[in-house]
Length: 318
Image: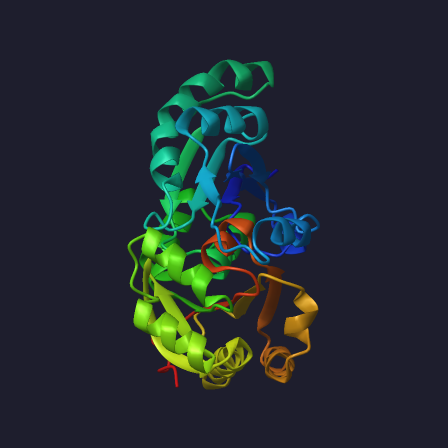
């Protein structure tokens, strides 16, 4: 692991091969289903089984994602990180969506203090340095921020330069779009969290006329910005919007992140995705497709589609 390690929680929808290439370490979430607990480590091979177990056909909403507590985060970092590098930057899911940022911030002092003996035994001198940053994003939006931060760190950028980039440029530019498939699931979850992205009226209309909302998330705030006849139509419109951004040169960084809470071949088969992939290749844009993390999918339901890009002045969604 490099001297400045980049850490991301399991809600980050960065493809596994890219995470490995950029040496990004995953901080797990805990999934509680009744009396049972399982770890969400962003294991892509396990996600299809987890979808079937906790999402498909479920309307009882009995499963939830829970961040590790301060002491648990300390233990994880002490076991897996502090002896492998001198500094680490943890880029968390939006604090508006999870208490992980608060827990991680609270774990900084304890982790640094308890790491001294372990680092000395491992032949490392000096105090361990841990920085926690709220990305203000989830899933594919978080993935783009983590990707850019990891690229900077691997290129030799200082921790302060990485932090400044996230907090002054990348976080404000993260634009995420979500199209749910199971309206009842997302409506119930939204109510539980006090959100208005899916109202009772929108749920009833959507159920009756097969209308799905297109939800936009920016800096932790969500709002419904459009409607589509079915989730596939909604995904098509979001993909075409992203392709428009590529052609107009609006992207802050040359990458687009796509995630799906179901078989990825369903997305690859969409003509709009194939067109986006073609435009991405022509313009040197990296198109990343990954299974949606269980932590995010538990809030939006099975077969939900997500896409994100970084742009300071994105075109309006039509």
